[in-house]
Length: 253
Image (cartoon, rainbow, N blue to C red):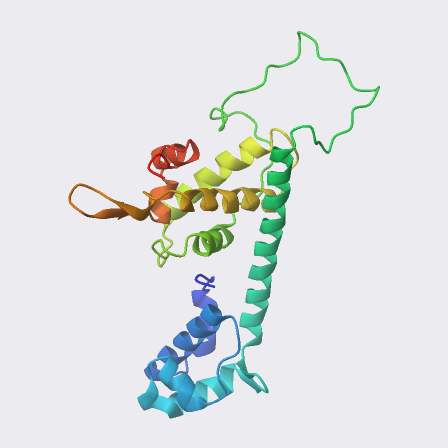
C-alpha cells in the first residue's frame, strides 16, 4: 500500500508518552509495514537498519514490543493487518467490477434486464433523456455512492507505478476527485443501479487507459529534450480529464 488513512487524534492519544525518537520509529515502522504488506523482520537490528534508525535499536525494540506482536513470521500489527485486508478486498472488488464492465462492452447484446410483457410502451410524453453528465444546479440527483478517496489513490498507484506518488491529499485535490467521481457515477447510473465497486471498476480501467499513453507516462520528449509526466492532480483537472477520456493524449503511441 502506498497510501493509508492517518487519524491524527487517534495516533496522538496512543503515542503522547513516546520520546521523539520512539515516535519517529513508530511512524517509520508503520510506513514499512503498510508498504510491504507483510510482517517485519524478527531481528531488531535488521528492522532498525531498515527504517534508518540503526543507532537507536533500544527505542525501536521498545516500540515493537508495545505496538507490535512477535510471531513465527515476524513482528505483526493487528490494526494494520485489518486495514491491509480491507484494502485488498476493495481492490479485488474493483477488479471484478472492471472485468464485468469490459465483458458487457464487448458483448453489446448482453444485458441484465429481461423484457416482460408488462413493460410500459414508450410514448411521446416520456421525459427526454438528459445528455449532460452533471445535472444543472438544483436538479434532484439520483443517489450515488460516496467518493472512495483512498481506494482511487491505491488504484492510481497500482496501475501507474511510474507516475508521481501521492504524498499529500489536500482539500483542493479532494475536491477534484469528488467532482470527477460524481461525473463518472452519474454517467454509470444512467444504465444501471450502481455501488462504489462499479465506480472503482471504471477508475481501474481509466488508469490502465492512462498507462497506454506514452505522452502521459513520460515516454515522449519535447523539443527541449524534456519529457512530461502526469500526476493524479493533473489528471483530475476538468480539461485534462476530458481530453484523456477522449484519447487526445494517445495519438503519439
